[in-house]
Image (cartoon, rainbow, N blue to C red; front, top):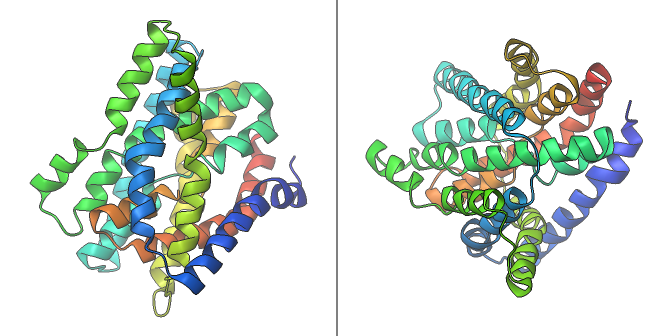
Length: 302
């Protein structure tokens, strides 16, 4: 079992050092986070996906099981978040941000190091697949959820096809399945752009948190955090068993499904007109709260 001190020292502390520095920059210099958000969305993130898929060596059957788990899980969480938003009578813009905060998982800058630390290289390999698939969903279903706060259903669906992630995924698969070796300059460019994604996302989070006001909004923030960290594992455990996922793959997918809200939710909210301040606040609160919930969850699955 991972100790809470190890989680804080090895995973949480590096994240909050970067977020804290960006927060100070945002507080004292007030740069516009939307500019960096677009760079992440249209440049850094696609190359992270291309590099991850191109280098994956898991078998198709195992990838298929992970993919099925994630797709069903995302849809179930979308339904749960929609029902909660309607129950508490959120307006349309807050409803979209609330659903986005509950559905989109931080399987990247949180999930990857956590899986490597808890389950070793074998766990990390499965976590990368989980991250890639959730990134695709975040940039398709997530785009739809973010867009519907201010756009029509037709426009929201159209926006799903204007994002680069599905095309980056197809390119990564083409490189992987075709056993293509990229020229060294291109390979290094792909790697460098992919490596820029995580720190850039954390910088955007810090800049957005410098603008956050949670006054009078604690109820939806706490509700979204509870859905992400408590309801999610209650769904993930029986779903993994139902799909026949076992062993270390089961451990990884359950833990990954129960992580806090992803930074990309704030990027999507800022890009497509949802409530970016709300999503940033949920990212912050859920990440901090997950120190306790993830530790308990690891104890249960290991």
